[in-house]
Image (cartoon, rainbow, N blue to C red; front, side, top):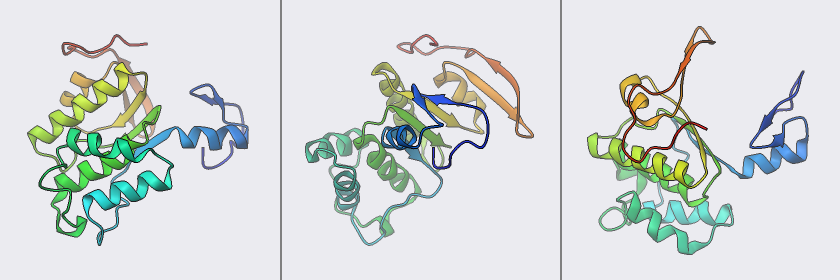
Length: 178
């Protein structure tokens, strides 16, 4: 949605991508977890989440539950981001995104830099988001883990779709593909 379409038409979450106004509306409802954290190293975990929440006009009351959900609340909330290892940095970036409660989640390697407990936490977040109506799209090289979380997988090779399939095994509580 950052650039207008050069040809054709497109819709995401029922927003018309040919309309600049609708692309802006879609961006407000989209959360991105990229490789880059976009966090301020000199701020603490809590300060980063509060800053981004305010910048996105998010109710400050959502911050505390999100920090707790991502296991950042007690001992890490007052730690400067520059002093965090990769896992807590990744979870802080997730907290920034989750506070916004986006309808569309775009996640690039969401399990990257996380230990086993952190990867399970991300899987739980994804399941929770889907159960509450969000659409989650993520790229992953960990096909086994992706297959346990996804309701549908799309395999790309050379920039082209080479296959789509339903998950090989569904975890209890997962939703059917829609």
